[in-house]
Image (cartoon, rainbow, N blue to C red):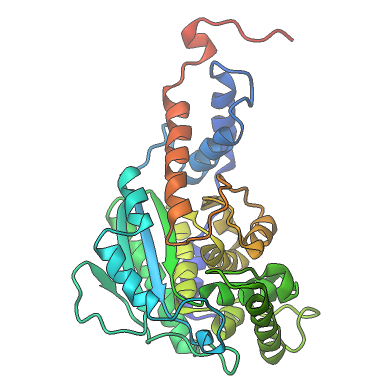
Length: 358
């Protein structure tokens, strides 16, 4: 049975408001352009209006949350980089030198770095949000990645940060991550949720060669057979998927998606790892989907599959596979543009322009 704290959050999640969506579409059709001519920008504006329930939609307090954690599965040689890179990148984020820092400055977004499970001691490092549950997940090729208590603690990290975001007046947030080995965890989560073999949802991650990528697939398939012997004939509980083969940062992302949805904060998810966390959230609370924007579609094959399964259309397709929240923050600009069009563009009536003939 799901814990009470999680049931309470899920119970608060409501779908997008159909009346606001209809009003938004009528307004978009009245603007000085052929109907539907701004394509996905119009869909984005209507979705945001329906989610936020605002006649004059606005964005305040943009922020990206970068969840960092290590993964025991790296013991199996699934990454081209050593796990030391995770804490090194945390320092880079805090020093403002990573790609996410550059793109966040351009988008006028705050950056919050959250240690939910890095295998390092930061000793009160300034600027770091310390919510460490444990120093990395366990090796899911041998045992469950987390205990039930650790899973709940990681979920709570995301839920608590969503509550803080609401208190800070934030209406649009992006989610990112950092953790060597996390594409392996995301691939395992994707395969378990969709029932597909690991070969269809697993990519090169940080740059594996073909031989090591095949080994990565075999490790995931073997782990899934161990944890879920009846898959795919019987789909496992999404929380058990997360606990057994996920990661601490993926669980925190799941919690933040749910927490944000319960407060009608719009969320832009980044790449494959974030989407895995969001997919678990939507499996638990399908109505959360109405408040999610897919920032981009990465080069990881499992990312496309998860986006299709969630009926999410990416705003960008740039062949990116960096993570950190980079694609999500780039999408801030498109969401902002869609709302400026909605609020500032003249209507046929206000501009005195004739509409198309029937």
